[in-house]
Length: 112
Length: 113
Image (cartoon, rainbow over all chains, first blue to last red):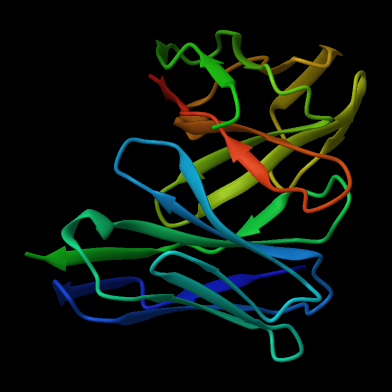
């Protein structure tokens, strides 16, 4: 059974810092990995998707990397802003119609 | 954003009553999913559909049933609600082939008293 772990569970940093969120998964046979953002009381917004054959994806100040063989992914946020405050979720898919297996998330607070 | 509408958005019900949650999509995505989100557990898959009338169980399917009679609608039914089913329920859709990005609805907050 696939298990996804996210470290740290919570993080508070001053505005402007660069930061890294970590995600690990136990079964390397994944089809893709998605990073989501969830604001309090809201749904999930997809940030980045990395296919199993890719090493990284970038969108604006966000960069996600994937090391499939070691079962790890990182989400790098550059020049953090208070608006980045949210819970960040990592999820993996086994492919086809498979649902996602989620980590429990990292609750991020960016202090103004 | 993918056009995913969940209804109702909030519901309070009593133990033992039947409850149906509806997910409606306008994107013509083939795959649809129901997840629940609970503190300490994160999001977990309840059921999913890989086509009209084609459904399968997820990790936490006990006490739930689903139906999909047309592409755009996916219903989640709690036949006899229990307090352990108090949760936030999310519907998602996914495209077949290619990247299979999943898109999520805004969620339904269900309280079973």
